[in-house]
Length: 360
Ligand SMILES: [Zn+2]
Image (cartoon, rainbow, N blue to C red; front, top):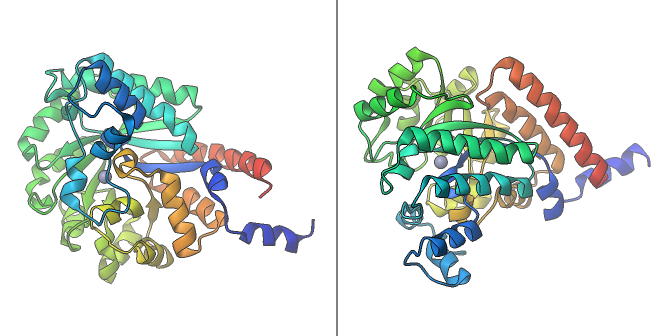
């Protein structure tokens, strides 16, 4: 086959099977939003919960409805805490979730979770929950030959900065190997970042973990500026507001602060209502560090591969564009330089296998 023929094949719009098989790097996904719906259904039956008894009605009740118009409150209402009755339930849901990532060809993932999400209704101990989730997820990741790291999420609508600090200090008692970052999530409108320097000053000073702040998702860019200037953020969740702030784009470039953007999630929450004009394309073209992520696949009834499909159909991205976007994303991972080099190596090998398997 000549070079021209080869190039022609590469320019063919990739189908879903190809996109599904493409090895992926993902750094923004919430455990609480990614349980396989069938596992959740089984657990609800086992725990005798008052939920619809057939899978289709169950899905309707707990997933964002397909083709529904954007609705932030409806989106948030789908997150429930009543599923678990025991630490074994938590272990099982973490294991099943990570096990399912093989279907999406995740090569490396940074998975985030809020320990308090699992303790509020169960009375479980946040330390036990944290260690259990990490152990179960590590076991599933090893079976998938996948690399995994963790972020601990703190919910700005649930805890004050000093309460967060107390939870953080308690968690430092246990072995947190594998945890690479601290995440601030929740309602950024009513609980803006300027309420939290007291907590993030300590995280920065301790230097044990990187910082990732959800900001500029449903607000203007001010929350992103405050996250950078006062919360020392290393990465930003969503940050769609950067599209209207050139000065901020330059700072993101200078400081190499990645935005993890999520096309489907941003549509459903109303953060960005037209998927065809999503800022990820112009921001990428402007050289802003960007990584494509899913956020909450099960709540969204949409996998990371659906976001890849949207990047292809809406922005004309090719497989090569997606591969180079993944390679660039490695620099936005919360890893040491040595680990990033190793990940680049192992990812390149996975891409070689993908090319051999698909003929691309
Ligand atoms: Zn998120």
